[in-house]
Image 1 (tube, one colour):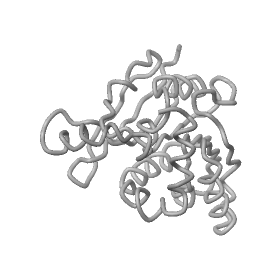
Image 2 (cartoon, rainbow, N blue to C red):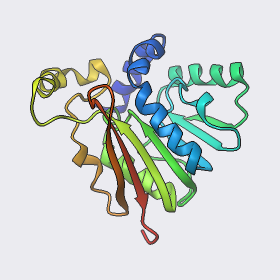
Image 3 (cartoon, one colour):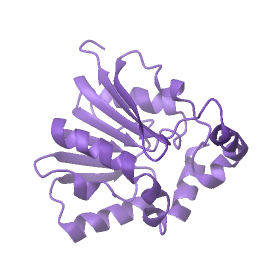
Image 4 (cartoon, one colour):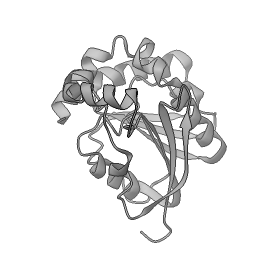
Length: 207
């Protein structure tokens, strides 16, 4: 799935995202934000989308959001204005494969339900690691492919429609665990029925 396909897909999703896919992914989003509220300070949210998470971050954080879709960002900016979210420092259109931030800049990075959406997810994770401070955390929530069962069969059947759906239903977790500067600190399944996974990674002190 290339960046143009992602942008076209989410231009279609933007008007209805909050009440469809956004609702399905709410548990994972809140788990990530709850962790960040307790542990973060200078936060980058990669794939901020329509900004569903933004009003849940605690005051006192500094939050930057990026997304490839200008249509989704338009919805996010409207939420910032509507709720007067002063902790949101900026919302920028950006390709997550080439983050326009310096090395070792953020102490916490969130990627909620986007690693199975972006082109070249390994490159995206490498970029998140680059801009994360040593000792900083990367919080990922996402659906990952199952090895067996009826859900695994459904994932395989829908995989060819990735460009239309806007995500890879058969995305394997191993693809984002290859970055040598990151180590897994926590991994847990989330309701309902373990459909989503909460993954916490830490950047090594020397990367």
